[in-house]
Image (cartoon, rainbow, N blue to C red; front, side, top):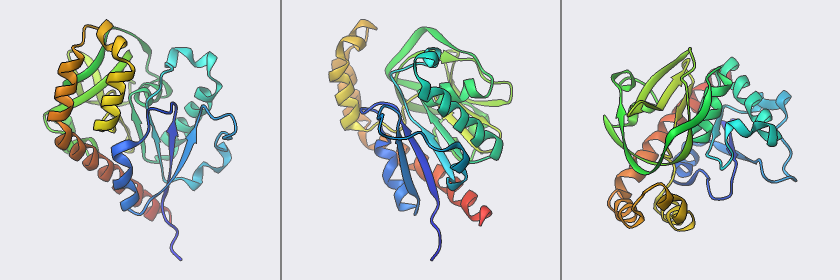
Length: 245
């Protein structure tokens, strides 16, 4: 029996999961383990057994990297990311995951002068054109945001996308990728966030009704973008798994 590739998906909050990106990964023949960092009954992944994984995905979080002292799971996750970087195991960080990856690679994470909330456009740079994962984004890709923090790019990173000076997408080495926005979030989760966190959006001057309209308008294209990204990352995982066996 052929052993299937397996990835570790790190979930930090119940309302931020893999969402639209889950199906393409499953359909690529990849098994997914989920580590819910908030579940005290869910043991931290054993650092000595990480070689069972052919990829890592780190999702968004309410917590920020600057609050690491208050969240022991964050230090453990940092070690997982450093392992992935050292072993060149495919790694994808989304929103908080991008910030922690930047920090794990030596970059500074800090409170942004102005966060990003709801829909924006990403200036995808020419360096992304031939990237095997983030190359799926169009030059002016749509992006759904919800973050207060930002980061300095680590010295060994390649910037692949930005918006008004904010780092939005990057690659470290050949096997680690990150986006500051949420490519995984589909219509249902977008609408839930716009409802649950309406006051937070409005406090930032966001027209929630306009955002809801935009969510409906971009539903199909954003889902396809999520599918393309997940499929591209899945291909990296499968290739990594094949090379190890």
